[in-house]
Picture (cartoon, one colour):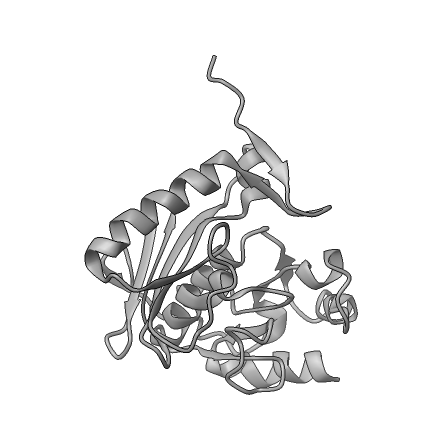
Length: 233
């Protein structure tokens, strides 16, 4: 029997495992060989600013799932060139799905081009959200939005991994995703993949402050106005 994975709580709801730290150290070591710039990362470099080029990495997004033996969880790597994210990769290890994008070159899943959903009717759509703002006790709780959307869409999924929610929006499995209370490493790579797959990515106000502003909408163009209006109603 394999030894139990060591883990600890960073906060009441936020768990970190030795795997998070091991993977992050590995990524930092290997990425330095590609471009020796700063790192903005969840475990060891969470306070790095975005004023200059850096790697933005989440070694395991969905650690609670990972520790509990539940899929999905994901590894996320983004390259920030000093003004914007220009490349991103997200790996879902359990399913073997590798999502990637480079700015201006489209988005791919295991080498094949992907596009966001073309559905126009909310009641036919499966959508995704998360409750980081609720568990963190943040202002502007999104629970009322959830309660409204549950009656207006086909189904709502809460997977426990924002990275997965974003890339599944990029390939059309979800029509849109929204969440508050997130960090740059949760959204950096996935947001570029959605954009390059033809989607719209903004903060809740419709602006571009989704990397550090803690709110994000990622949607197909057809349903963007619908979800933005629901959030701001």
